[in-house]
Length: 485
Figure 1 (cartoon, helix red, strand yellow):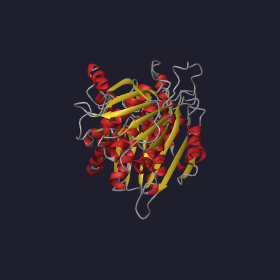
Figure 2 (tube, one colour; figure 1 turned 180 degrees about the vertical axis):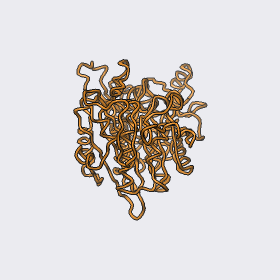
Figure 3 (cartoon, rainbow, N blue to C red; figure 1 turned 120 degrees about the vertical axis):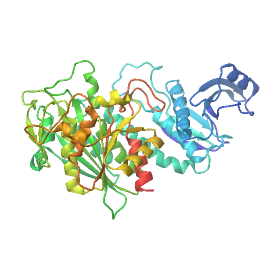
Figure 4 (cartoon, one colour; figure 1 turned 180 degrees about the horizontal axis):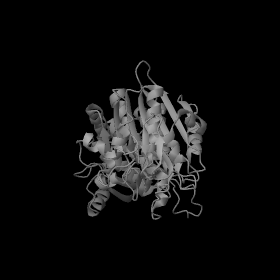
């Protein structure tokens, strides 16, 4: 969807929306419109939409009022995003192709106006390429939003947010695609094509390179699939002279559980077990498109976990790239096996000062936090507070969870350096403890378990059912506040 800007005197589309805060309706609305809105109990709450038709000299104008909530407060930008998203959700398949959002008299700042537009852009995304029998009423018609009389500076600010939106949309695309379309090699191919011309340096490690590096943990997961493993590194060097920051993503493009096979019900959802890798790719795209002044490396480990005759068995012992040995108790605890080798490689290759990894790692985190928050585990309090603040600002919310020696000893193995699962309880914590064993001295590290947040069974304020793009906005905000701040 395109976002354009127009002056108040320019020609308007047939559908125009006014922004209305919570409280008395604006005095400049016509009496019939005010009465109709009041009769419909429209009060300007965030995301509330009222529609009417207003006669004009040139014909009927389709007029919408959208609530922006109460002025001020820490949730102000989120409320404005909700308003933009609510408008697009209502008119997405309405037959209208253009929506004008009139900022006249709204008293919004440029940043607040852009929040409305970002909510609209993100809510517009839908992936219908495999639907061949949609009726006209089901097809998306809305292709353009026109910001009318937006506050001064809105258009230049929008260029940055448009880059962020492209990153979120790319992540949603990767996560939504089925596993017969997106697998390790094709994930790489799609990224190589998308990053062409952006200034991002791309490094691809194929199966032979991974074997030469000794990535036995990652390759153990991949050995049951005909799809060869890959590691993809994306570097945006928008600033020189300091140690880089690394974002690392789990990219299990389909997870059957391997020999420890998952139940059949819902297994089709495991196409999004590469949501961490998708978020890293989308974040790097956003940073490159907006020319972020930061040195950031995104690295993703890409495998498919399948149960064929060559698959890894429970009880196998593998040697990671770090040299540490791992007893594989459960082949469905595979994400940490992928991540541990990628974490070792990125530290040896780039010596980052900070690492943030994102992974749909455990079902246990959903038991703890549901679908509202991702779990955050960190070895550094400052990094944890910075990520927490970025989550609150971006809407990709985090909740810090504990780690420590009492949990760490739960993954000791009688025959290897460690085992890949602990006891039944505290599963998300022991998974984080496993990853921490691969973090070098002096490296600030945070692990984000995003299993409950990358996919939604119902629409949200700025996303439809399906892939949410969680993580992109979080990482982008962290870069803005910490690395560029």
